[in-house]
Image 1: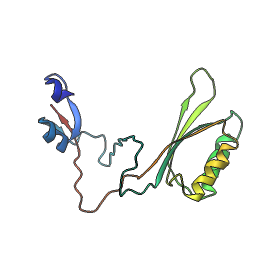
Image 2: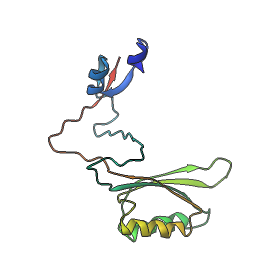
Image 3: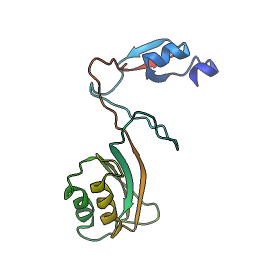
Image 4: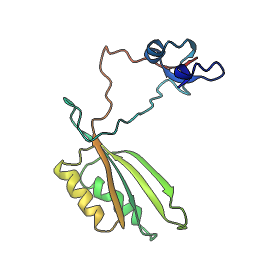
Length: 152
């Protein structure tokens, strides 16, 4: 948008490659808060990418407001050896003390142990949705990844 509109009073945070593609000049490199910073971007589509093996699943669910409900929910994954790579809670607007839980699982949705864990969770979670199953980002030896830079 900065390049397309020819903006001189705005900037973009992007990779060095993006700057080259869009003809932008780098003002500062490595603007992340810490050296291991990783920003995730998702491409949503109906057709799976070829040559990518799904190994991660994102879900969202709600739980009743009662003692031990979150422990019970998370135990369906622990009992099956499924690692959680992200767990966030967000309040449900207009419903005090009720939350949506966003979870990333280190398993594909169609793996038997993940399918069983989600079926078990669905027994007591009033709402459960699978947001997607996809290949997780993996670092490859020798592959250069550009740090994020500020472009103008």
